[in-house]
Length: 328
Length: 94
Ligand SMILES: [Fe+2]
Ligand SMILES: [Fe+2]
Image 1 (cartoon, rainbow over the protein chains, first blue to last red):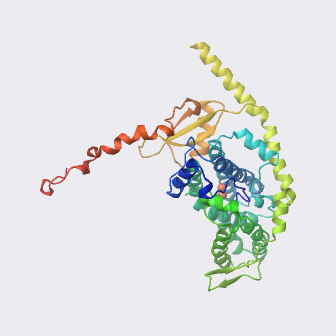
Image 2: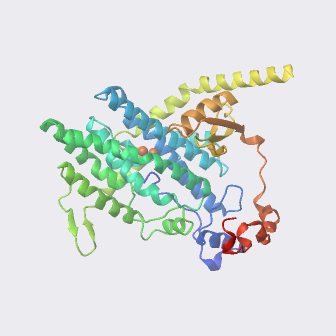
Image 3: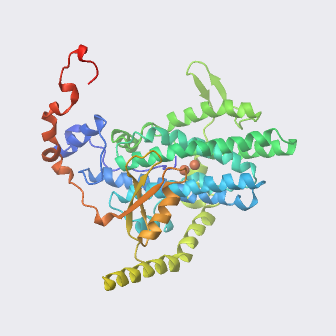
């Protein structure tokens, strides 16, 4: 998802837990929220920093593929909408960085870890956005997949994370709708426009399925994260939900999902579908996707080029504060 | 490495006359920039008509371990709630 392959620390049986850890787990089982200064297992804290940090990085890096089209949007209205959407993603990143910081990591540390490649962001943002139809496909599929994951996370056990998720979910449905709206427009357009929409779906379908991460039904990391309620569903559950939700939407557009094995399975009450190519997923995560170098390069450049500005504003603030004290 | 901008807690009062409410935090070099940033980060959809910003360092919070001594005493004082008292129906609304 926006946080993929997050390794969780811990995974202890009740017998192995200390009394503190036991009462912590009981609180979570009762549905209580954990707040920043309260006692928490070190593993819980570390896993959350990893997960929220990766989620935040994804929101920020996720601005780049769409930012690519702001100057080339087909109308002024579409441009304003896309700009608002991309600005929202900056906001999402900021809410999440703040939530991570309540766990005792600094913003600069998080940035440094992103820039040095020690922390990841979602694999999906390492794919290029080649045509305007990609703005439709990204909103519809990528934000759609993100929503699938974020809605249950509103109930996560860590208070600041849960509150950030609630805010984000409120804003997110606009993102998916504006994407689907672009797809509807293009599919009702000329044959060339419809072909562009189909091409965008072809390219984004499997990367969108990869967003949920490989099957984790046997993973101890996932089991621990689910016990702590920082992961609410298995990757397969969410992927299935996403496919079942998206297939009729594609049908409405008159587009074909690029999967010959896609078929409704009456017995399970869901679609059967092909798994994405997981070797491609691991290659992208390892840094070898089509746009990894470009995306990370853009982030590092923005950070480095902005250094004089951040320092300048801080120097100005310090001087003004000194003047105020002198005048008192 | 530059020094990080300080952290500010952001409080917003919405349209309907309710109190300022804590909505989150952000980094900014000074109070003025904190307000400008808060406008962009926390009021993109008309959420507010007034913003307060407070340096996070200037906030003193009750500690989680004091939860019991601080808040338990009010548990036993049920008579503070109007429903504690039975008022006969013929009295009407009270
Ligand atoms: Fe987002
Ligand atoms: Fe979004």
